[in-house]
Amino acid sequence: MTKRFKAAVIGGSGYGGAEIIRRLLRHPDVELARVASVDFIGEPIGAAHPSLEGATTLRFEGLSPAEAAQGMDIVLLGLPHKVSAQKMPELMATGAKVVDLSGDFRLHDAALYKRYYGVEHPCPEKLDGTFVYGLPELNREAIKKARYVASPGCFATTIELALLPFAKAGLLEGPVETVAITGSSGSGVVPSAGTHHPVRANNLRTYKPLDHQHVPEITETLTSAGAKRFEIRFIPVSAPLVRGIFATTFLHVDAKVAEGVLKGLYAEAYGKEPFVRVPAKRLPEVAAVSGSNYVEVGLQIGPVEGDRRVVACFSATDNLIKGGAGQAIQSMNLMLGVDERTTLEDTGGWP
Image (cartoon, rainbow, N blue to C red; front, side):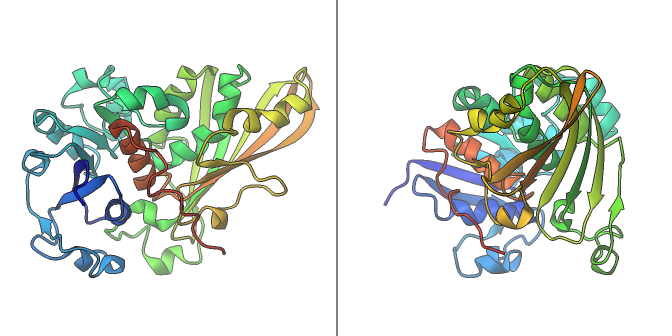
């Protein structure tokens, strides 16, 4: 059967690439036509991704982004930060739609990009409106019309979805504090001292405290959604997990807001969202979403302190799927006019 659309994956040998390829291979409307990589050139897909051994006759090709995009309807771009921005002009010239999984086009401010990514942006003119931020729960209609989407970061997705209903309701004001633990797959396929198993398996350690590159992304997104004088004080923590992010965020809301209103925020905001779950009788947990495109959110209402009330928000995602490849495919589906749930409704396993 001929499929309606053709897609290429560029940078397909990493962990996120494996998830994109796996799901595109069973997509009813999109044919995965090409996988480009600087690694494993000429080798079958299973050489990098053992779970896909024999699943396809495709091989990794050593193509430039422009060559890989020729004749494609859409490109899912998995190049590293700073590399993606350098290759984007030639890619855009092909006419293909693009979902970029790097952080190179998430921010609107070139100065913030330099501050958090350490280099001048090579095409700052494309930071102001060229790319739609690919969080469907916030920008679904804009994503449907977009040619270029900047897919959110994994921490950003997890934290933003916990706080988005508060921002939209005008209840997110001032600083919040977040601690989020993450699995080792978020550090990528190339090992380092910080992701080496003997160090990671029985350890908890922070990195980039108060200075993570997702801070300005979260700030921009939630401010655009209605947060006021918003500031996030964010501590990421490396945990002995392979997959998953669990975020705990403390915020202070107006004490005059009734507890019933606070308890109803998530149900009201996410009642019709296909991939956001609000557990009825428990709080979010990583094992419930691992292997899936779902995010879980929940909250605990604390005491009143003066004119403010403490609320603890909890959220959990699979960093490789809803925090990466799955969310990119969700945006791809919207851009192509197919059901956004396609290939993403599997629930993962338990435990």
